[in-house]
Image 1: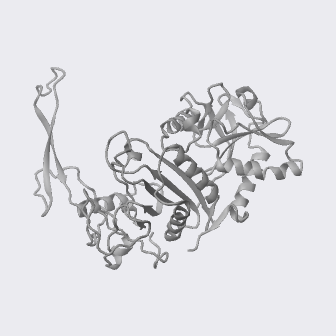
Image 2 (image 1 turned 120 degrees about the horizontal axis):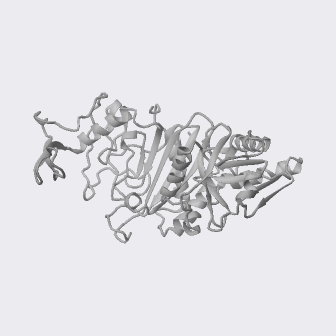
Length: 432
């Protein structure tokens, strides 16, 4: 999966624990490590190990695919490998032959791994095929560079984004070697960071450069760029006062196939909708979104639809909702209580062409009742991952004819064409 040759005019190797690229190992090169919290792309020749981290400049040995046993049992530990025998105590709760209370049962040998051994096991996990997406490159401000080794695409466990959800994120599609609506997504990203009280590790221009260089290193020409801004690692406290530096992460995901505008079913979600303060901020607290998506799938649908506190249509699990009324008006809920979708706003702009040629009678954004939504000629979900997806059934109600509508299909074609050949304001070329 690794690209041939240097992807860009900057160093991409990092050697904080697992941060040695597969390309380096293959070629037998030993990169100098990056100092945590260093400026982006800064190559430091001889930094000291950060507190709590072991830094190794040696190459990781290659590892063939093999099963990692959870227990060493009676086998002798390999040289350099310490074993901790962890006794699991289990109190008896019945008289069915269970061990008495306090008896030690099921001893398990849990190995104490060195940094290189952890790296080997991460390699084995990657080789096992457990991941169903292809990760082409990752940037982390923690090690101050880019890696193309998926095994090294990790973040610290004490990052407050992990254990407190104190982080924001955004996404930009990659189409034909261009980043789609990068500027628009960056604007929303920075607005979300301000609302979440996360200081910026770099200015906007630097972050933009980091994101573009990460895509450049990946050699990916079709897929997506996801990026996060966290208040940073430091401790497991609730307050972020112990976090010395905020952290920027970015990852490139290869996705050669395009979404298909096939019709789907949705349900009215029973999961409480997010309050407007958190709904308009694209933060990492996505448990309500995930449960809404799962609930939709459990009921034979694609996702769930949220209603706001007044009972009006809000949004889907991670996409906006649009309707075509019986008088051919394109209608969307207002963005004051929901996430302002970059793709949805672009669809509204492109839909002006349909008003001009008579395909639509108009475009509006206002409150939409469930009754009005279910009575529409067409319903659609709009988002960067699906573009425009027709909805043919909502709960037990068929939408329109019960088939994909022509306006949804036209809007899908318009946004796809915009991604491929739109103006410079929405397409940023990647200098591979």
